[in-house]
Length: 225
Image (cartoon, rainbow, N blue to C red; front, side, top):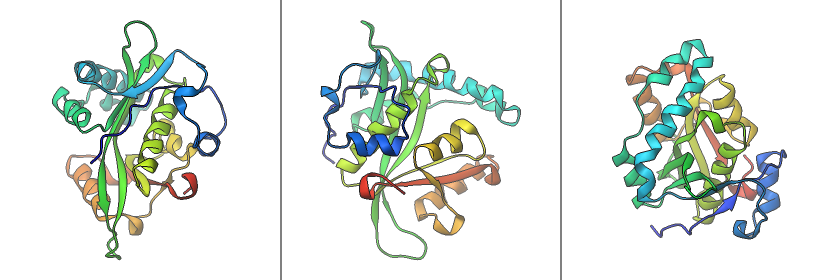
């Protein structure tokens, strides 16, 4: 796989929908946009890897607001080695505080899938978002949306047909957030084979299947489902 181009752009404070922003900016070079905030997004580097588990732990504290999911605040994180693997493949981005420290305050990583459904033999390439985390104190500033927009821009430019992910149902900053940026929740009959496997692994790991869902965002026509 060809390594993705370096992406470095400011995070917009625009409150329009994510799909609207995508159509508005899809042909604009982000590096040429005026600085709107001090946070920027770039490809993750090896030096970032040791810092990213702490970002995920901080993000997990948000689940303390949800009594049934409060245990996630003390759950494990992706390891430094896992981050290094994503970084070596060019499949991880970080949001950084634009000060001299260039310190990550959020990240997104994922992997490419050749997808088929249980009722079809045709294949399509998707980008599956494995993890997106933003430090608790930096949430609500558009960083998550900026990371998702960067992933969508890269995936569309790399020939992917869709973004996919799995997440918790009925949690505002999980399923609710992804719906707000254009994802739709898949019915069980719509799951690709790889999503079926992921959902089964999550259930085997102890996550209640009824509390989880798979979501899909088409990249056709600029990213509308």
